Image (cartoon, rainbow, N blue to C red):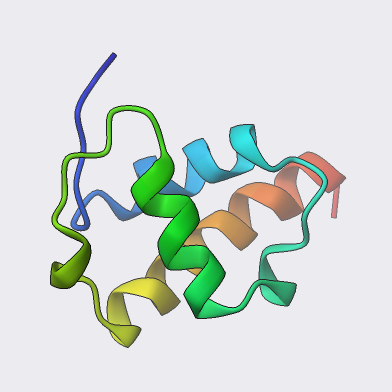
Length: 72
């Protein structure tokens, strides 16, 4: 399993889609998003190194992946 951290935005987006395929990323609160990211297998980032800008970028990367899966 490849390790990744907060800067691997697209990787996190893909992994969140795999972990939560039924969830519309735009409905997820940042507190939940933060927890879900830190719980991903292979995630090595420090929880405290997150910020709103990073979470927003992750959410949008996840949303783009989700939209593709939805055929939108």
